[in-house]
Amino acid sequence: MNDGRVLFQEFLRAPTRVATVTASSDALVAALLAPHRLDGAPDAERGAEPGAQPTADPIVVELGAGTGRVTDAVAHRLGGRGRHIAVEINPVLAARLAGRHPDVTVVAADAAGLPTVLAEHGVERVDAIVSLLPWSAYAAAPVPELAAGVLAPSGTFTQVTLRGLHLLPPARRQLRDLREAFGEVTGGATVWQNLPPARILIARSPKRA
Image 1 (spheres, helix red, strand yellow):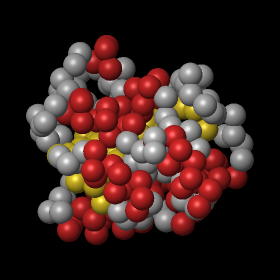
Image 2 (cartoon, rainbow, N blue to C red):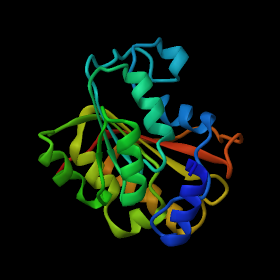
Image 3 (cartoon, rainbow, N blue to C red):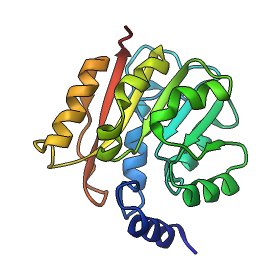
Image 4 (cartoon, rainbow, N blue to C red):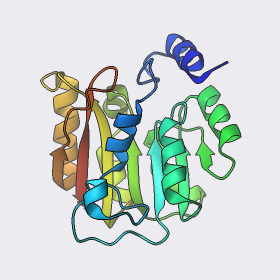
């Protein structure tokens, strides 16, 4: 069964735990990863903050990995360097992802348990977190706070958010929580090539109590 059919099937089975019924477009995946320094490409090519050097062996975490479109792209960018941990709450999607990416640490778990997941795998700090979590995940757990707590000081967190819904209470709460957990929060341009159109929230300078 192809990824699209599996995603739709799992959405029908548990709609609050699957963020979308369509896989992320190539354009959205590129926008999600652009702020992260993973492969040493020039800043101008990646849209990343100028002047910073890429991490030699970055530790990258995915939240809500789904069918693995972002996983494929992260693995390509890393090129065998660093460490790649993908967290997916849906056990069916997680199993498929693990079978396709044996070199990626795939964990079937809730994002709320991120600190525990990392501790169980011997990781204290990570360099990049990319998230496709739905709003329901933010309502159930302090995702920005958890992400800020495990990011290195120079790390970056990116989150996909739907375009045109920014005035809805869940979107406003998401943005508020990000601003409380990070010193710098910006929004990327709308990715119209995605269905539905979306944009990326970029958070840097994690705050810690």
